[in-house]
Image 1 (tube, rainbow, N blue to C red):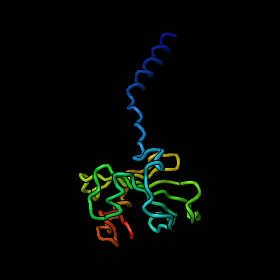
Image 2: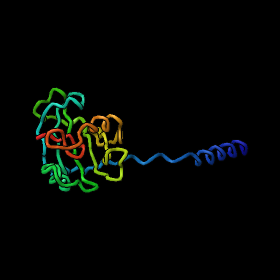
Image 3: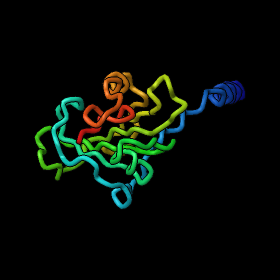
Image 4: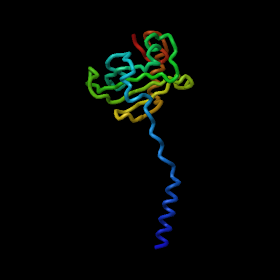
Length: 154
């Protein structure tokens, strides 16, 4: 019995040396974002987001730069793309995921932005995916192509 107790104790001690589970990543927008974010692009089909219908919203810090296209986005400003099912042409159904842009001017290797892909349960499923950066590289500036890599359209 003593050997069994010692063996069990050594197993438990060995398990305590296992690295802790990583903290879940937090979505870069509040759950109640609809109370303070403003729609800057209405519901439309997005060829770049798996043909989903999308709506784009800006947090208060991103609103003026997004709309004017001539002032810098402050660090931490958030642009949020609500994504709906490809058959939901009115964006009235359930949101299936969000894509988020967070201004991070020091992130020059990522065009000065951080990105998140967030599922319908608000779990961050990807950060700074290559797909985001490769698409947004074409949105360098001007009123037609976008401003500061945001792909804004008039």
